[in-house]
Structure formats: C-alpha cells, structure tokens
Amino acid sequence: MDLKSRIEAVLFITGRAVDLKEIAEILQAEESEVEEAVLELIMDYSAREGALEIDDENGYIIQVKSEYMDIVEKLCPVDISESVLKTLTVIALKQPIRQAELKELRGSSAYEHIQELLDKGLISRKKDKNGRSYNLKTTQKFDEYFKIKGNSENLSKLESKKLSELLELNKI
Image 1 (cartoon, rainbow, N blue to C red):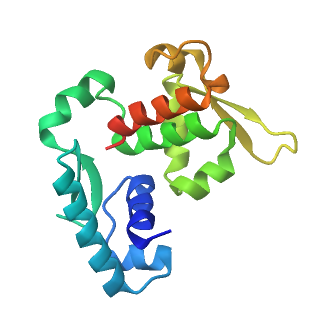
Image 2: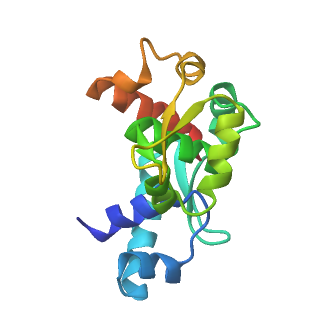
C-alpha cells in the first residue's frame, strides 16, 4: 500500500478536516513524508478534473467541488450531515456491523450519528448474542430512499459497488 492511498483512506473515513500531525500519527509515518504525499494527492485530484477535491483550508478533507453540489442536494437530504452520511455508508457496506466496531471506525461521534439515523428510520439496532453491543443494519426506508431493488442486506458485489459510489458522492 502506498502512502497516498493510505492518506486517502484516512481522509475518506474521518469525515472532517485532519491536520498533518494527526494523519502521520494514524499512519505511523513521518510528518514530512505525509506532507509530500498529501500535496501529490491534491495534485492528483486536481489533474483528473473529477467531482472531488482535497481542501486544505483547516486541515485536509476530501469534499465535493462546489460546482457539483446540486447533485449532492438532489441525492442527499439537507438534514443529513456529511459525517452522519459517512457513518451510514459504513453501516450499509458492512452490515450487520457491531456498534462497537462502528465506533472504532468512525470515532465516538458515531453514537450521535447512530441515534440520528435511528430517529430517521434509516437503520435498525438489535442487541447482539452476548448482549454487550448492538448490531446495526439498514432498513427498508433506507432501501427505498436510495432506490435499492430488493434489500440492501443482500447486495451483490456490483450492487455494493454502486451503493458505495452513490453514497460516496454524498459523503463529502
């Protein structure tokens, strides 16, 4: 795995601006190497002229370019924040996922995100077998909202990739 790809994964999953020091700590890499790789990654995103960019105003974050926000607004209700949508993406792609595992992936704010997603009816939560955590999965309302045929729990690899791409658009 090259450093740029690992940095891209960090920026994708954190859902917030992350500074060089934090990225270096997460990846156990030298800060100077991280800085060089981040700058290369910014150039890569800029050169491919896609819908995503890496903003560096208050740390580094992957986001949708402003000229594509109309698409995001059509696909994502305004009342779901970017970070909550990222949490929903993880749940949808890894379901059923233990709440404890989700917290490890998304941080302590995942608990607030879970509650919001439960309130909106997009996920369900059941105690796991040992009663120490909860298992999370998407609901029929999620399937209907994202126009998933059948059930999101039984997605083929192709459908899972499509879902990932759809939600990735909205994650920023």
